[in-house]
Image 1 (spheres, rainbow, N blue to C red):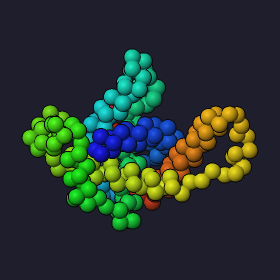
Image 2: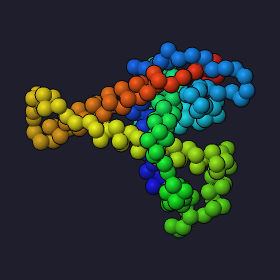
Image 3: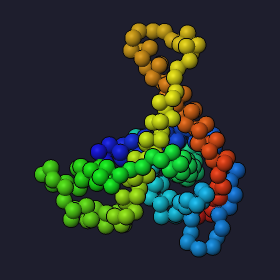
Image 4: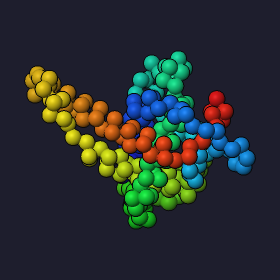
Length: 221
């Protein structure tokens, strides 16, 4: 399931490549330079430099996998990848705050089931704690940091699904849909995704305006 959640998380980030580009650096303030370095603060929530660079490397890996040899520094620059990663993390944190207000939580059992069914940590179909710790050590993550990130992924996915579930196609949008069954289904799916993206972006932007967001762009320059 964790493998599935990672795929959802990857989709979540790629989704924000499409959605959040219109919100690049939302007119936010600057982070107080005192204390431990934070790339951004959303209310009481902080995005550390370590968290940011880990997400950045994950997104770069996703793009390399999608575009193979075509992904290069020029494409990365044109995509404004660093800014996109930052804004996707901010958006994710906004959703986490909203989820907390709605009482959406992940139980310890759900978290344990997710991790113990991840093939990366299994041998011969059985979860191995020693492999779990070894993999995290290679990734330079503590179990606490990793498990918190998985909780966030699950909660963010649930919040996104909650918002998406409220999206319906406008009958007026269907008037120009034509073609064979396959073409119609593809067009409808594209319309649904577009509407869901717009709803998610609107929801996040509305919440962001109610929160005190600060960014220290120098840490990712």
